[in-house]
Image 1: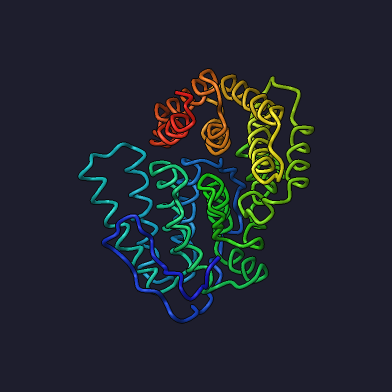
Image 2 (image 1 turned 90 degrees about the vertical axis):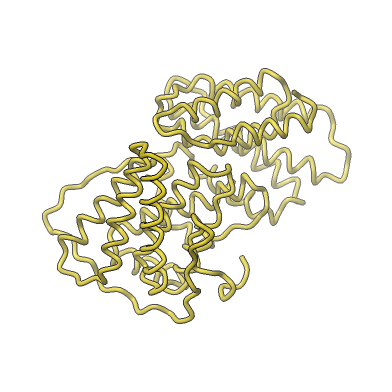
Length: 364
């Protein structure tokens, strides 16, 4: 992680607008009271669901009796406006204007170290994940971690903060998910959040993106990169995923299971081979290629309308890094093209990054 004191609280959607690092710990906010008679609303885990989450939070702070600084309410209002304009395909001028207004408000709230700024940071992070360079979405996460450090130093304090601010736990779940997947994609071992932060990621969240909980645990293990020389454990973890792969490919969830587990096994096996002191036998490459085939088959079978489709980008990318045939490349190329053609275009350079890897390996 790096020293907390060196981490700057800044959302870098625009490099020209930065907030000074806050030197003092912020006084904890009071609870934002929710209406007692409130129906349970299930919000899907996706871009639109995140905007719904932001909208619900805005309605709650408007209707609550809690006195909040004007700039925090203005931040949520302007951030919500920016997010909606992006989703609705606003013109470039309008989009830039709403972006600058929201970012200016975010800078003010970050300057006061109010935790509600996490909603704004997470919104910019969400669009960076969808629209920025694939895997390189860590800049907003650093800002979120720095701000969070001013309020929480352990899980108990995090739970207390999340209990006082409705929706915050959901927002943080997105951030820790982005942290793990981004670190895996970059393969730099630079996780931003700690294990106790990741405890906020619920089973419901993982179910919504189609990722088995034990596969997520392996993702974290691989992202840390601390045990890459332990070939036996890497191979054992990979085999565990393979043994647990769903044999029922009749549902979107079972297909997602294959994609997540298969990609995790591929990475673990590949690292085990790289760490081995002995030359890797041909059968090692055959095993990885077979797993790539299995994942590609699941990706090509999954409907583009599936709620899991846009969420399997990281396993698709990890699989793409180990593709070895033209047919495998075609499936993964098609996945990235479909993501760019969906209702809100996503992952603009995922295909480019994979193709660069394939060129380096002489596949295309």
